[in-house]
Length: 340
Image (cartoon, rainbow, N blue to C red; front, top):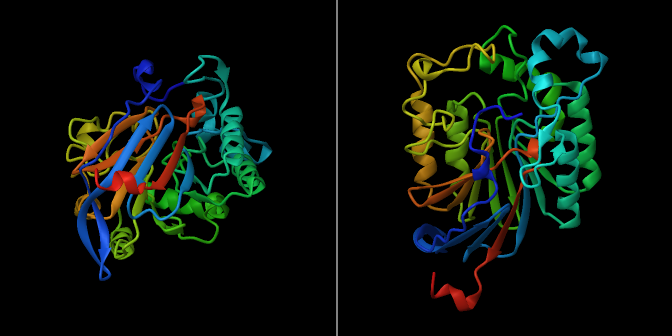
């Protein structure tokens, strides 16, 4: 079952693109200066980055929106809050084959792909769970540990949400992060973390409430003061002009007047005044980051690619239907450097 109604045909392939004029940076006397030198190619589930500043190859398997719904007797007291989402993805249709599948089967196959391909890291960017079930979280934690592959986790809006439970989005996220999701962060801060992997800086920011806090803005600002190439991981895509409200982080039209799903999801309505100024400030600094190679997001259950101020944002289709992204970062070969 798809959470939103999209044209399914558009999820079968991504158009290949080349970005030979994307603003990029190189180190010069430990300073950052603009440089054209990034190329991105997208074909189906494969995403390839080539850049002068990438020193060695890095392979990332990216997973979003698995929507695992498994539960046991520990979840009985919460059934009032989990009932709708527990039924939402019991069976899905594979995004390529059209055959019946399940989120559990899709997740296991994706981890097997990561292991067979010797991935350097698995990036989980939200809505891995349909609600914060103890059984599902323990199962995922165990499966990830068994791969032996490092992983990064950033929460989505469903990971911590029991529908109809009283409280603000921020307070509910804090409660269920502490009670259930905490092991997945491996000692890192749940709302913001940095992971330097073979010369690439991955910054994970939790924007699952659609908003950015002052602390997150400061953290991001501090972490981009580096000559390393940067990749931003979020759950909700950064707003792109012309996109729907689901591209909500930094969307000037986001707010109470455009919130159509708060009754269905049994959650507080989005604020009347829209985004906080801090969220807009974050949006601006993200797209002014000279060494940002790209952004990865999920949430909308449909593959999408946007180029915003020369920076590619790649949105993954849902893992519940078998999708994932095979992302490879490689140094630009010498013979191509003059072209880029």
